Structures are given as C-alpha cells and as structure tokens.
Length: 267
Image (cartoon, rainbow, N blue to C red; front, top):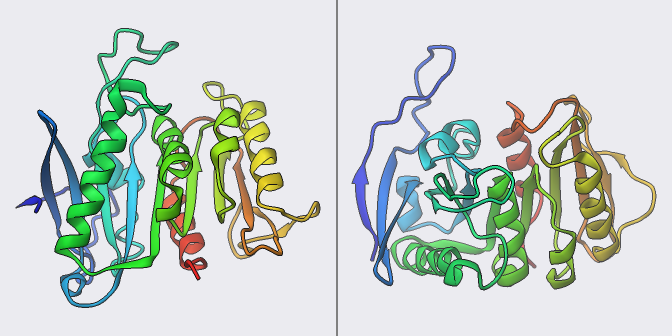
C-alpha cells in the first residue's frame, strides 16, 4: 500500500477560491528497491468506491511534482479522475545537464536500471489496490523529458493506456515499439530545444502507425489553436496541436489534454 500525507498546494491563478469539487492533493510515498520515491496524488473521495479514470502526469527535466501539478494541472479540469504527479530523480541529459544535477526520467529501456519504469509499476500496483481504477480509462501525459518518458511508457507499458499525450518531445526510434493508440501531441513551432522538425518526424511516424487518413480536420473548433485531428478506421486517431510558441507548456495545455482523454476509452 502507498503511504499518503495531506499537502496544501498553492495554485497560481486569479485569486478565486479552489472549486469545491477539486480533490485535495496528497503526497504518496513508495520504496522501489532501496530508493524512496514520491508523487502527488489528487483523487476524489468517490474513487475508493466508483470506477475512476487514472491520469499520470510527468514533469520535465529540472521540474518537480508540485510544479507539474500547477503547470500541467489536470485535476482542476477533471476532478472525477485520480491524477498522479510523480517526482523524478537526478538524471543526466547530454545537452543541458551532463552531470545529472536536476530531476528527470529515463528515456530508453534499460537506462538507470529501469528505475522509472519500476517506479511506474509500483505506483500502478498500489493505486489499483487503494482505489477503484477504471481500467478502460488510464492515461499518461508529460512535457519535454516527461513527454519522452510518456513515449517510453507507450513503448514499454502500452497495454495499460487508453490514450497518450506527449508534449515538447521527439522519439522516432521508439515508435517502432508503439502499438496503435489514440495520441495527442503538443508542440511549439518555435521550439529551439526540441526542434519542431524533430517533433514533426515523430508525429508523422505516429500518424502512419495509427493508420490515419492523410487529410486532417479541425479538432477543437472553439479553441485557438484548434489542432488537427487525423481520423483512423482502427479507432486510433492522432491529434496534432501546434502552438506558435517555443518549448514552454501552453497555459491551456492541461485543459486540452483532458478534452482529448475524455474522448477515448479502451474497448
């Protein structure tokens, strides 16, 4: 069982009160091998009795679970879901942090002795034990390094998820290990860290994998950008959501991700 501790989180906003329906955040602790791990868990009171969606949200390199719960906060937009914001460990990144002084996630299978895949397995096992998880509605998202780990989970634990939503990342090599699955990819067309051209290669590879049509259509017409949805006869559509900015996660990104996830459940 996971150990839960209540936390008080400060959300940056307009000064309005937190919605009553929004679940309180708790810090959950695990021991994976000899390593202590933790995450923030936001779960509705009903989740112990009623089948509830489960969403994993992974922060970028140098990020924290608390920051992710604000910048990629899914739970305010989906209070009925169990939302989990895991904390990464110090991880070297060749271009930006070769000494591994900042927190992050493994990006390939076997790296770091699969410490983060094992952490995911431990979280999923205990969450299933402590809550009534709707197995047809388990999802994963993350930005940058967290987006890459989202893609690694698709490759290595893909059968768990109903849909995935990576942001600001690329993984052409991993796509060979993907099984077709509904996917939303968020990208900034001026991204200088993870070049948009690299992300476009990944998006094109996923569209092909998912058996999508060559012509897309507006996805979320009431929003800007609307995004482009590429339908698939396999039931595995791909949504390309491109913003005019750079490597920053968009302010309405979590809301858009929730809209996408709500459209897809495993059959």
